[in-house]
Image (tube, rainbow, N blue to C red; front, side):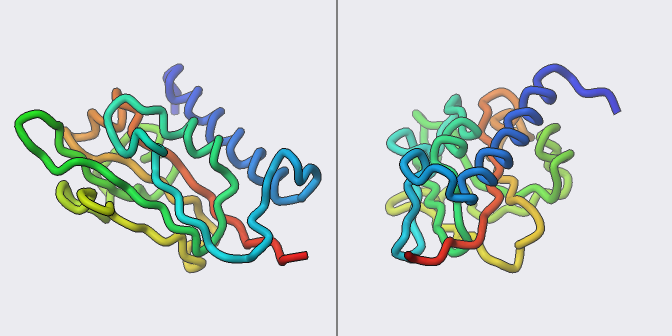
Length: 164
């Protein structure tokens, strides 16, 4: 399989995410990686104040907000479709290959075009998916938002460290 340059960059970012998350979970530098020692799950608004929209680098956002733990909640906020906004949705891809290629053939829609309005769509990172990362994408326009608008990111949740 030949990778294109952009696919190689995404693969390197995904590997960097796993390494960063792994090192963070070791607890080697608690000042650099502020743990939630209370043991309580956290809520993350995907994209921060920019929410879920075309043109935001969500891989960068996920790296800056890592590590993510089981039972944390990701909140996807986006405007419902209108004459002035593009429609967005949230889908899960089954594997890294689909993620790198923005291949939506086996994508599972988890939030339609209207579910991101108001308080947003909430997705809890569950333990049943323990062995695999979650691959999130916007599936609109046959993958155009994923490919060109970089509306995709991966999360590999960890077991929450025990409180001190």
